[in-house]
Length: 116
Image (cartoon, rainbow, N blue to C red):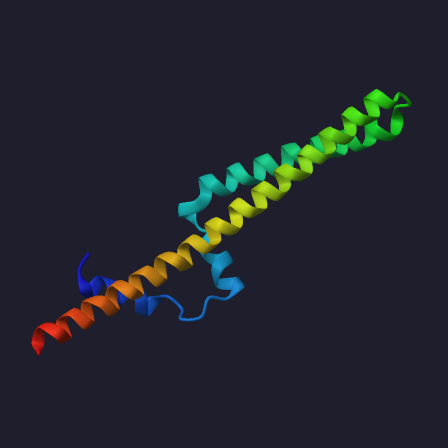
């Protein structure tokens, strides 16, 4: 990647990383397969969590109540895992921008040192 291309990318990207810009970077065509996978996982485990919660209150046996409670807690853990994964994917783009900025600064500093 050449310096002009890097500078063009840096000028197009916003200097301030707001939540809106991060979400806009996440919900784009390039990330579509990951977004679909995350939403399908969330919907499947949401249905399983609702099912286990309903069954928990319907049953009278303690053993079954423990089983449904554990299933519900595991579904909640999957929700947390999906949320953390999505948050990391959102921050990945801002980290890439920072690396490009550092690369441009190092190239500029290298050029300055070579000129002296």
